[in-house]
Image (cartoon, rainbow, N blue to C red):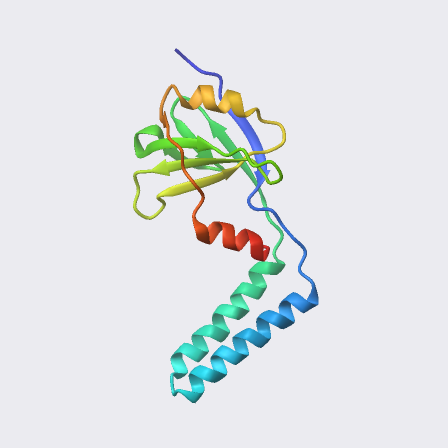
Length: 155
C-alpha cells in the first residue's frame, strides 16, 4: 500500500524578540560567574562562561530558518536528511492549547534520541497520525525539561 507523502514547512523554533534588558541581564550574570571563577582561580571555567555567553547572545539574535518536512513510505525527511523508519521507534503528537503543535519521534540513535518536529499551520495532525501508525507505534512522550526551559527563556 503506497501512502501519499505528507509535506509541510515550519520554522525551526518559535522566535521571540529579545529586549536590550535581556542581553544586559545575561551579560551581568555571565560576568558575575566568570568573575567568581577567576577569584577561585578557575580561569578556564571563567573563559568558558564568557565564550558560551557570547555564543548564546549570537544565537538569540538569529532568526529561525524555514525547514521542510516530509513523511513518506521510506521515512521522515527533514530538509535533505532522511530518517528511515527502521531507525525510529515510536511517535507522539502534542496537543498544546496555547503553544505550537509538535511531533515527537523516539529514535534508536544515541546521539539524537528524541526528534522534536514543529507542525506548521497547514498540516492536519490526524493525517500524520494515521500515516505514522502504518510504520511506528504510538507511545506517549514528553518534551525534555531542558527544551521547556529553553522555550520559557525565549529560545
